[in-house]
Image (cartoon, rainbow, N blue to C red; front, side, top):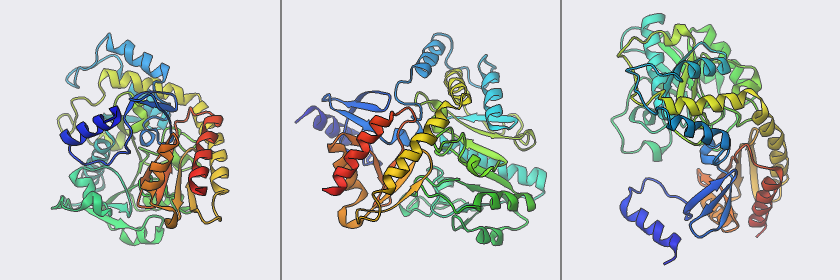
Amino acid sequence: MSTTETAIASAEAHSAHNYHPLPVVVASAEGAWMTDVEGRRYLDLLAGYSALNFGHGNRRLIDAAKAQLDRVTLTSRAFHHDRFADFCTDLAALCGMETVLPMNTGAEAVETAVKTARKWGYRVKGVPDGMAKIIVASDNFHGRTTTIVSFSTDPEARADFGPYTPGFEIVPYGDLTAMREAMTENTVAVLIEPIQGEAGVLVPPAGYLPGVRELTRERNVLFIADEIQSGLGRTGKTFALDHEGVVPDMYVLGKALGGGVVPVSAVVSSADVLGVFRPGEHGSTFGGNPLACAVALEVIAMLRTGEYQQRAAELGDHLHRELGLLTGGGAVESVRGRGLWAGVDIAPALGTGREISEKLMELGVLVKDTHGSTIRIAPPLVISKEDLDWGLDRLRAVLSA
């Protein structure tokens, strides 16, 4: 067997089969390119589901991590450390908020947001104990914990994991009327993705997000924006909500916040909302650790320049123009997205999204499928126009073949 085949066989023999990766074994990476164990190079058009917005091995981020590794990596929140205050201050400022509650993974941040909304509902809004409701959207993807899959509509994510956590109302994504009808005096929050990534990079109708903001203010309900994939530059703005001038009550952040180096997530909100917590009521051993804060501080500094948002906007315009030219010819049914983020629906006659992804891999381009016939394109924001065009040329070749 080849080195690749041996590595894959060993992985499949000794790991749970909860993923179905493409048959490539990455050994090193830099920028927008990855190299496998056989020395073959691949253009990364997935960027770790937006965790690698700043590319593989970004020197600023690696240097920040290395410098912190020589000082202190973990204290737990039992003690203060000298990177924590700056991290919270700078992230709050980036979000235009006041208070930060750091965690590690996106799912942990979503769980934190759910707990925050419920506690706020009981202590501030006056909802009777045990009666809090949170409205979510169909086709959502917020993580894979038991509570989060309880309000998923994806059978693969949900099946066989019951009994399910109550307290959630599911309404169609983009349907403001349905959301309004679902609200009661016990509704404490609306939790939505400004763009649904896992569902195929679904962008809601114009006016929907401002409508959600108006409705939640009117009914004294928290607007929680899950910007774990869409935030931190991916769409050409710092946050996807920025495209419509909307500011939520709470941001849920992750993925790119750790720069592709360490897992970092956070809930960012007002002091009034996050002030519902008292010592001992919620926490995480690794949340807000010195190494995570050091890397995230560098991410925040990079975003403050606006350079990465501008790159995503300009290259994103080019990406969507080129992808738009593929529609109408029978190969691509539709294209959606914003910035350097696109969902491409392949005509079923050409093959599944998985089959198209495998053909692109053979030509040196890595993407990932979702929901059958859709492939997602989300390159690192540092990708060059020439490399992006190279990847698009390979996509055209696969579709024309």
